Length: 478
Ligand code: NCD
Ligand code: ZN
Image 1 (cartoon, rainbow, N blue to C red):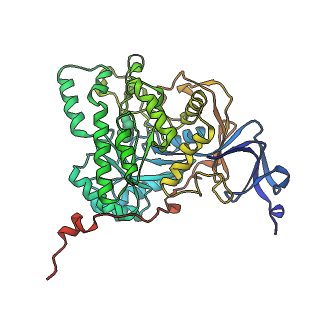
Image 2 (cartoon, rainbow, N blue to C red):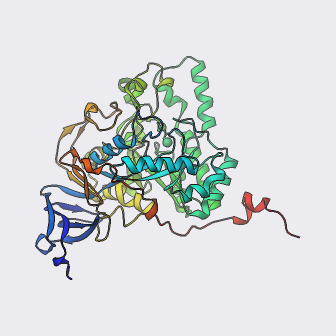
Image 3 (cartoon, protein in one colour):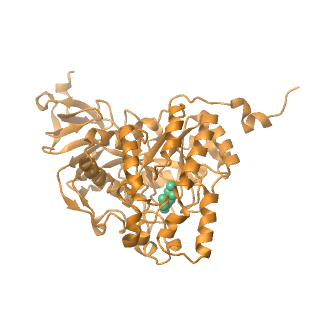
């Protein structure tokens, strides 16, 4: 049978396809959740359903490798249904959910429970992270068997109070994960530095928003990035630096890359679009870890994204309630804010303003995340055979972000009132509309599935295996 005799489920016609290398007008035919054909409309197979995408851009759905959906534990902040609905409205077709829920995801049982929750509620595909800490050290194999996308290591304390491992424990944890090939994502802020500074600032009576930044200068993050990179180089573990917030972190990141360490990095819209000047007006609403910093960090972070030193854009979507974000004393304000829904509009607006290309954006938002976690080209690509994960976007639409109208349960963010020039109109996950004409599709709930099953990481390059904790403590022969 030739392709023209096969009936597609859906054909998307008239749109402009954006890939990391090119933009071109073509139709996409979708069958059984996969891209069946891409080409001239006349040459496409017949389809049960058609969508007219004339005037719109078709991007691979974004993969946000850093969201906190709070489920189980804090449904009043967000749950897997509201969080993935927000993703769908933001053109995001895959999310990686962080393990600082209640319970924290640190053993196979808690992971299985979260898989059940996500499987029942998710509107988009997902990967689940597990905690890499002293408590989860004995559980790493069982966690992998139960289906994780990767591990999250908290080098600094944050929401959920997951204790940060000592450097000694981190080395042992890296030794254990290295041969598995899984990537370790790091919240790279050194706890002992910021705890000490926060204690001193609090003792002085500081409660103002800028005291949060004073407790966490860029050296807090830079020292952590450098230390993690050394442990990764020694063990051969793959690592990912979450939420890069400062110019200073770029040097250890670039140096480690140059030395052949499998290290990747993300930044988030808040580090490109917000600055220390915003604390006065936005107060606790912009309190996040790592903190929003001085304006001079913005351009170097942008440049690092353009030149590939920073690999990707994620959001650290971290929803909290209005009450939790508007407390007077900055130390009592919960850290983080929603972002999964507004990343694509804000970043496409920034791409236009800074004259980057839509192809650059697709590399940061979809291709790189898929490649770094072994999901490419099933995810992160618009190619025949890829999953039909599409963000269909109007890149010429002026609108103003309104917290009251976002899907996320958390109706408070620093993005409120910001103007954007792009808006996702339809989001398709494995061939099914999650959002259509800015409306959530009822039959999408529960359609999302875990991507760990399709993950294929390249063979790891383990180093110093003869000097690991396990090796040196093994019973001696003879
Ligand atoms: C995150 C949260 O609220 O879960 N908060 C934050 O400020 N980024 C935790 C985190 O990723 O650090
Ligand atoms: Zn973090």
